[in-house]
Image 1 (cartoon, rainbow, N blue to C red):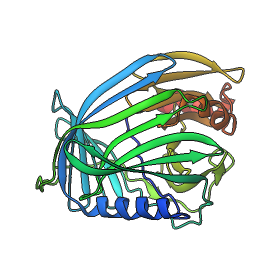
Image 2 (tube, rainbow, N blue to C red):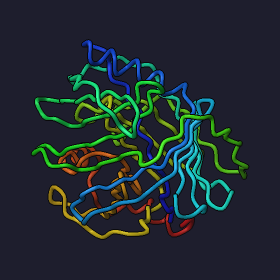
Image 3 (cartoon, rainbow, N blue to C red):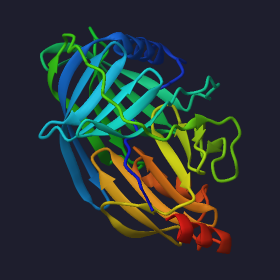
Image 4 (spheres, rainbow, N blue to C red):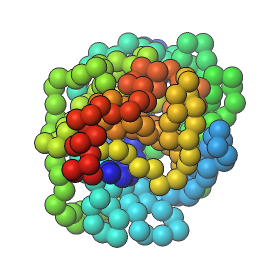
Amino acid sequence: MRRLSTLVLAVIVLPATSAGATELDDLLEQSRESAYSAEQAISCSTPDGVQDAVVRIAQSGGEITVGSAVGDDVEVKSGDGGWVLSRHGGVVSSTSVVGKEAEVDPLYIVEDLGELSALGRDATAFRLVRGGVIRAELVLDDDTGAMLATTTFTEDGETYCQRRFISFDPTDPGLTATETIDVDELQLASVGNGSLPDEIVGFQRLDLYEDPLGFRFAYYSDGFFSFAVFETPTTVSLDEGGLVEMGGFQYGRSFSPGQATYAWEARAGGMALVGDLPPDLHDEVLAALPKPEAPNFFRRIWRTLFG
């Protein structure tokens, strides 16, 4: 049994198709080069109740760390070409997500909402609209490009998640490298399959990885929202959550602040989806992936022998 423990960090790759989009793109590029530390409050209204947390964020030299503000046991480190999840100083999982260069159709209209003040700093607000639906509002710091606040919405206009900095220090935190232990390396793969297609309802597959034991991982984005799909010969276990029916099939589901996770067994093996999608997008994304069903005979033998 493979226990899924990961965090998908949002990567915004909006194409610049308007003055607002161009300004937003410039600020995001500026943000990638900036150094700062902050505390961020996250609150999400999910179908299973409100999920909230406060996390510490630090960025320096193209590397970002995200850790708990109330304990030091778990930390996610992201940088040029990868992410690492560490627990008590040892790496639990790591991979190198580089993102292929791809032409992405402009799905979002970017509206410039003008200037405002946030945490006593000059900032600019933007709205993202997809298919006539307001999906997000962003507040970016004018000096550093840091995203001071983000609100995402469901298709009926209800707030899904709010993320906002409650403290912000625009000085270099001087990050140190995480001490790692040996882990199975995931290799970049160039060819997909039916279970991990190139495109899922407007979300383009940016990366695909696999290891020698048959574990496969694909990363998808529509330019703002993103999710990862995992495929493994063994079953996938969730620490929390319960069963839910989606499209006539049962899935394991759990929510954490800013993230939804689904896990199920398909004929090809264990499957999981992890992402920041609003709940109204879950059905159509899951419908494009292999449906829950009992594994075939040889998969059952494999699991009996190897777990």
